[in-house]
Image 1 (cartoon, rainbow, N blue to C red):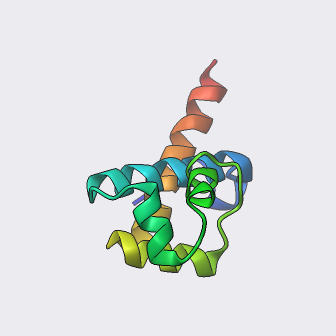
Image 2 (tube, rainbow, N blue to C red; image 1 turned 90 degrees about the horizontal axis):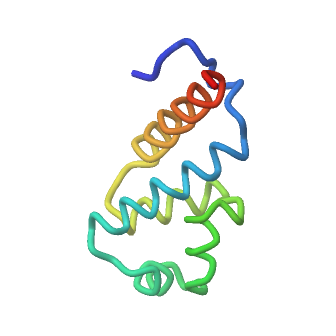
Length: 96
């Protein structure tokens, strides 16, 4: 369960988007898929996968569910991992 010291609704949206992309990239690599293979499964351009993974484009929730299906992970798990990563980044930044 995520730490309660940083309320979910106070997470920085940009920081969360970047964390979500990093988690998606990690999961894609865990299952051994290329960006092109994921893109082909979703019938989208491979560059869009790169944009999501690098926090350059907002991943809509309906697309998140489709991506999670391709990567064999639940949206809940992906979001929880991204939330933890975002909290850690915010904590590190505030500790400076």
